Length: 456
Image (cartoon, rainbow, N blue to C red; front, side, top):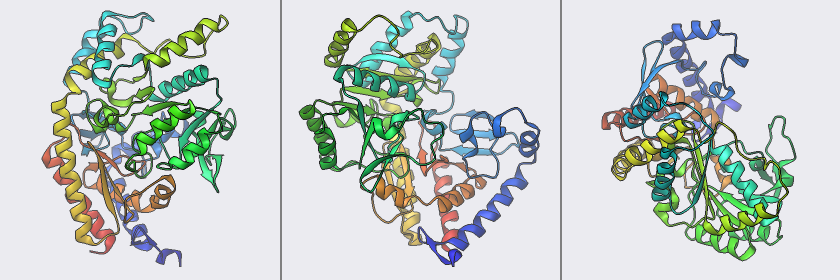
């Protein structure tokens, strides 16, 4: 019976048969990759980071080189790359200004634990691009979020963080929560959690201002941490007035508003916050901000800085528990300066927006032509197809819309047709160096794969 059921409007048996054919084709096309991985016994489970095995292929693609918006594997296959390091390389692989900055800085030292003039220039650029925040530099957006939440707790004296069901904030422990029957619970599957995340956070559905107000009214919440658009599973757009409501509720109840733009930096120069005029107390961004060099940044308004200074003046001497010695290194500043001044430009965002609109239209046309109960959503340069008939309102709906078996089959089919998209959901990014030909190849491949799954 199970093989007769529908997943996203497609028969489960058809999905399984398609996936089996695509997996066999992938294996047959990559003998060198298979041999190399089979001989590698030094890493846990064969890969240097566990999620490298989370791609839907039978084994990981072994990359030989990446340039612009193209990857080449060790078997010589070229892939049009619409994953782009899950946003880390959103402006293309090794943008020339960033590559030059790395070469130039390499001869001047890699880490000092001291600032440089380039650091001062990068700070000014961060303010010009993202707004008048007082900045700190981290190595990842996870680190940046973790530090921002420490500050929020310090200046408010409150213990909890409010997050939205299904949101993405890296691997910050207290954000690893969900809702079950209206109660905040630790997400299933967590390993080695240092504390009960449900004791440190309260989880609310995205777009639910009444739920936010009820949580903030307890007086326990130090900060609301949110993405402007939910991006972790199936993209969820904010309802009209949602962000204005969040700002008003935080003001009313004395909580800080922290905006995490790790993914929504795709919205335009300055992120969704600048494009849509949001006014957070703290701001976090990472991934592509330094052109692919591991970097996260977080900033606070002058009002939060004043409160933090008062906390520092009153605290006992000793370590704050924040920061790492390799963060804010000179290589990061070289890449930050190059990216913010020469890569993250209005002109590049305009090219990305136009390409993403072309991709959105092409995918939507293919879905309509095939009569599939799916839809497409876009935030700037970020596009997703969702195997669900209507736009989503919250994390609960996103969980229902997520169709792992169907999505994995589509991803597998796209790779075999020369197109790579993000492994964890259906995210595609258009970089400033992505060509119309690459976009059209992806649209054609998507139409072919979806057509086979739909039965022609």
